Length: 302
Image (cartoon, rainbow, N blue to C red):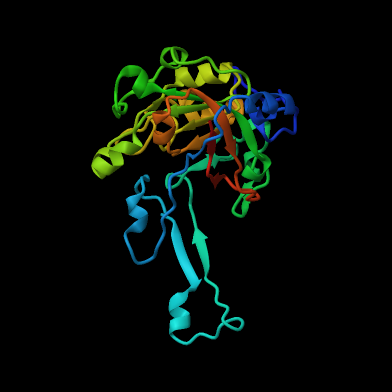
């Protein structure tokens, strides 16, 4: 059992949505007022998959993770080779996509993704996470997310193009940019995806991210979710691991203790170029029953 401040029981003993419960109809309607121009930006990295080309490796990802695989079951080559059309002059292409999203694509972590001891968020038994999926706190419980997004462009605030790998964003740095309202989605830019095009080795040498102090500050302000352009919201070392002690691990702090969903590997460069701090944030994870997460294409409506 956890002992520091947390959201266990706050939304009822059976709750599996955490702080997404803060997105009441009135909060959503208020968030929609953040759009002023109607411009829509896609905040997702592209998913590139193939079995016989280097395409997946051209998108930022963590090493050692299964990369997306994209297969064509029927394509133009089949018809060129004599495949029978499905109707007079009618042809179709059909494909299949395999995505292991953690560490490889823009995605949302479910509340069953990480825990400590024998209990998931809100005291649900961790034994309910089985080989076929999680029967508690799976991503299908998240539902659609429509909220006010608040961009924390920390590199711009510090006069940098991107944060150094060892940088851990402090609560003071966040507070200097904006104070979130309950139900907001805090969107944190480190600029680290820009490093990928310069050097894969540098990208994998570590990653900047939120400090535990900043995570507690966001949780204390009742954010509905936290999104970041790095691979783990918190910082990583050269082995792709968190250096913080267990009690300060951002996944345990936010997912496990506070029920705050994490959205990772978002693309924020176009949004940052608009110099907008406030916007409408929209995301709809796939309803993968028992999923520990879902690929995601978040939208920013300006």
